[in-house]
Length: 554
Image (cartoon, rainbow, N blue to C red):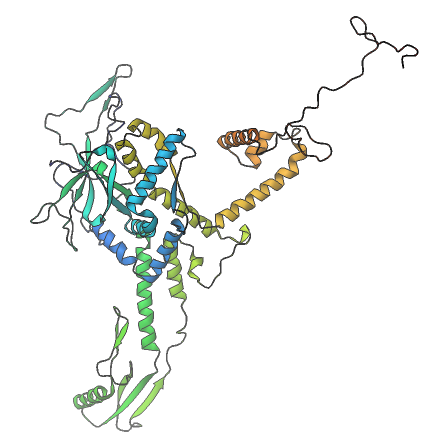
């Protein structure tokens, strides 16, 4: 194989235990698997007439977003996921759960701001997220100084998914190859290690606009790029039958096609049925059949004109520019009849009904996980009680949260590369820190907040009701876990925060003395001294005798 372009990061699994083996090759469940023995990668055969390769899918997704209804649904999703205002960045790194020093946290925050600056994310966040959502994947080339890798990332360049492909190549095995075997002497079992999988990307800058991506043909030159030099994040949807990464728009392909056909057919029906139609009875007298038919055609050509509807442009073409009598009927009438007669038929009825259009619009929105209530643009924004919030809005909020979580893989991968290249963390340290690094996106959907606030109010109401019974029938632990729904981790964190705020004087100490006049804790924990008691005069032994005053001493 040719030399890979790019760089390779040290891995924490390079020194793995040789006794830990598996017959299953390494794989990534959220990406498609391509196992090839040599050369490039195979192409798909269009058996079902759906798509041939991933490039065809990406082109179809990009065509779909040009439809007004589909574009409106996409904008609803992107606007909920990415919120931009004048003061704050749309996303910040959240390190509250990271078990590291404050110095390391500050370094990570600074490096993350540097990565956003390289991507120009604060200004182009909407376009970046929209592109990832439509294509179902995104590629970025992480450019570094190969002579000074310790300087970290220098540039971040976007790559069109049509020009790059992830290849997972299985190591070529010779005819005398024997798989490594681990033998357990106790159970006499054998475990075979799977062949090694080599991963890299193939970049073809001169890919044709139409057609598939082919290896090194003519002026078509491909470059093999190391895996660590590319940031690759998918939507998480995979067609396991074809091993193809899908976009969230894939479920809406059928619904959008149906909506297009229904709209076009509705326009054609209205144009054809709206005008009144006429029946022409033409008197042909005693003409023979052939001459009668010729005479009827001459009359038709003299008065008849056909309007043609162009589905591509939505226009009606009429070359002769005559007043049309659309779909008229021409019937011959023999001698003895009533002569030439014209009868008018009424136009189509119920042409104003749009139930079928509304049905497919709702179906399109549901296929994109967008609440169908957002189709009605006349509806206002209501910040009322949570009982007025539709369940679809809550589901939509969770869906947007999953999209944000998925898209955060872009920041995770770039942050990993930056920290390891600059020797801020080691690969082993990164494996332990990665799960605790979160990203906080600006939030603009208040439906879930309203729901949480109302649930909290109900919980506090129940807490006030059972407070007289605490210590008798309910323990503090039971109330916090069952009523307030606090987890064990949250309880520990809250207790630590309360103790810290009491020590800092932010919260009053519940054990402090209470001023009987004001009912408030006394300032500084005033020392009232030991309680004064009367001496026991009956106490014998070493008790101090009480001296009575003598006369004249008072």
